Amino acid sequence: MRMSDYIEQSFSNLARRKLRTFLTTFGVVIGIGALVSMFAFGQGVQKNMTDKFKELELFNCVNVFPPTMQEQSQPKPALSPSAALRVNSVEGTKEEPQQAPVLDDDLIQRIGKIEGVESAFAEIRFPAMVRLREKERFSLVQVLPADVCQSGLSKLLAAGEPYASDDANSLIISDSLLHGMKIKDAKTVIGEQVELSTLRFDPNLLSPAAIASIMRGDEIPFSRESYTFTIVGVAERMGFGGSMPVRSDVFIPPGPSEKMKKISLTSIWDFFSAAAGPGQAKGYSMVTVKLSSAKYVQPVKQQIEDWGFKTFALIDGLKEIKRAFIFMDMFLFAVAMIAITVASLGIINTMVMSILERYKEIGIMKAVGAGDRDVKKIFFFESGVIGFLGGIFGLALGWAVGVVINQVANYFLAKQGVPYTDYFSFPWWLCLGAVAFSIVVSLAAGIYPTLRAARVDPVVALRHD
Image (cartoon, rainbow, N blue to C red; front, side, top):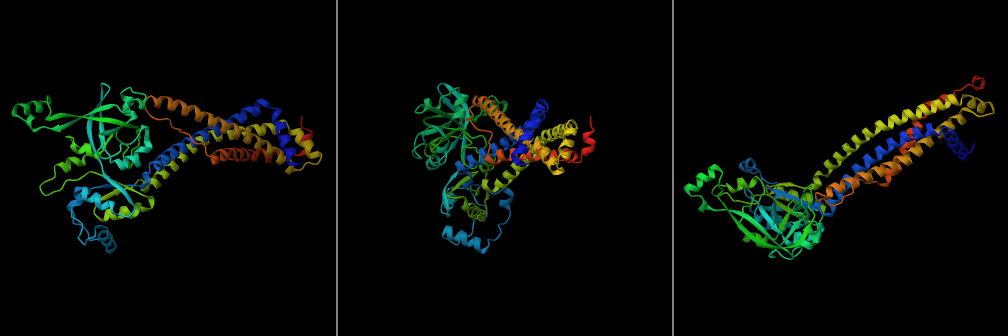
């Protein structure tokens, strides 16, 4: 028999028992649909994260932190000859690094001279009340240089443009903050005035009478200062932070920030820095270094660590991120395999029942010259057809489930100010793999029924009633 004859006969035999074939195939559809939708969700999350990181060039960034108090108190180990040579080549001097290194402006200038470094800027954030259209909300304001704003933050702008210079009296606000103020159209706020109110320590409020009120919690030793800025852009606020400055709701240039009276508290480290004793220099809690290419990450990290600082690069955690996604895919695959196993049992049951019902038919085929191999092929093709149909319709079901869940999730998240995101991804290998996997599973489930059909004795089968 030709290949086309086996396929035609398989469809014909399955069509004679439409309900049983439909129910068996539907079981495969459910299993493959669950497998496809779960894998597509895992791929979608991974694709969104990695694509966003690459778009914002987060893999080209290095975060620099000061050493811990314990590390500062320990004697500094001697640098290796290669490390000392790198330090001398950058600094242009043979001086040894300081025993207690500090993240200050001098360090930022030194980092800027390292090969591959495009820019370096300090992490400066301070609390403020944002007042816009008679509405007021608390937020963290981040100081961001204009060049970094134009190269990095500009990719997140939903409306407007980055501020032009470090001295511009302008700011960029996030769409999530506008959403909290019940402002839906980001474009309407461009050019409007916004008021930032900061707190500053006021020693005049520390009179004996005021101290008693402060101890009771009735007053605080701070006064409020207000500053006016012009909104020039609206940015999408990312919910997962990273190495780039996308974790705040308001961004201002360094020039106006230096003139503001404020309390700058980026992290708990600032409390210890503020309490530094005499002779102990104060510095920033973090410095972000942006590189021209990811190939400079390790050399720059090594250079800065030789100076006694701690570093972190997102690209170093990429392997751990991928490993986490692998475990997630394995978990989703295990869950989907439950449905696949149930579908396989349905295929076995259907094929065994088909053998019992066609017992005499098998005997006639063998009596007229059909061999065991021909019988095996007929039942193998029937199993394969069930797997093929289950794979095609299962793929369609998984895609439909993904589309529905994606639309529902974005509908509710849009109310929270989260931009539209495709949470499911259907790469070509997943689509082809799902159909191929369905066929393989169906063929594996058909092995026992096929072997049983091949062992039918034609003499006994012809006398079967």
